[in-house]
Structure formats: C-alpha cells, structure tokens
Image 1 (cartoon, one colour):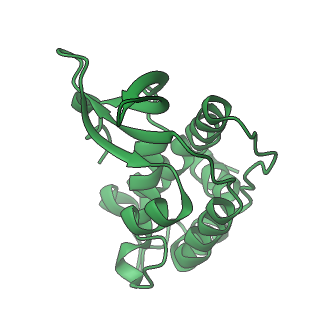
Image 2: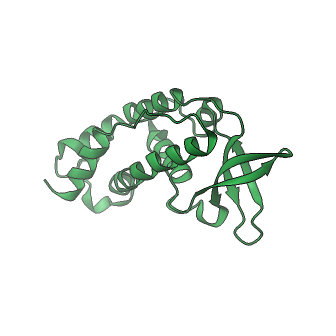
Length: 174
C-alpha cells in the first residue's frame, strides 16, 4: 500500500478521542491536539483531491484506490463524524479561540468555543456536496494550526483561556 492510500485509509478510519476534559485550558489543549493529529491527513487528502490533477483518472480516481475513492464519495460522512465529535464537547464558560497579531500581541478575532459557534462558523450542518472538503480543511487549519497556543487573555474584563492563532499564520494551507 503506497503512502497516499495509507493517508486515505487513516482518514477513512479516523476516530476522535472522546475523553473530554472539564477545565477550559485543558479543553482547548485537547481540541487543539486532537485536530493537530488529524490535520496532516485532511491536508494530504485535500491536496490529492484538489491540487494534484496529475493523479486524476476519470471521476477523481487515484489509480482506482478504494480508500481514496471512499474519501471522495463519503466526504459528508467525514463531516458528520466531525460534527458528532463537536456535539459531544462539554460547554464551558470563558473558553475561546481566535487570532492575534504577532506584532502587537492583541486579539484580532475572538469566537466562543461552543457547539453553536463551531457549527455555524465552520458550516458543519451544510449539506452541499462541493463544500464538505472545505469544511474539513477550514476546521483543521483553524483549530489544529501548528502555531496555535492556549493563552490566558482578558476577555470582556475577565480572564479567559483562548486558543490563539497568529493571524499571519491562519491562511497557512487555506
């Protein structure tokens, strides 16, 4: 089995850990670590599916590889698996994710880390076929960004934990 087939098989069989922590800093670190482990597979599949036209055969077939074909035709199932994982996430107060300027160290964007925000922001409920891979990719690059860190920040005059992503790095891979 070649590397591309292994990547697609791994993505096909991916299972997120469900041992959710109940403290804000630990929850942010857990989400980041889980998605960071998943990011290379989503990125590689995205590259195979969208960017490597030299690998295409009819209908996005990669040398008739069953694992790649499964990932191509079951993108909705991959989004559903991600959505179900997010729905199991504990809802904690003072838990955020966002971008900051690496020059000024100021928060640029800020979003609550909760089911409603994640579902809306990343379109986890969208059923359009042509957007599933974009949903997976955007979620992975935001919450699994290799440069993201969990930081204590002042939010709404209170101390809160924020998964901070340098705004200069957010377009990495997108």
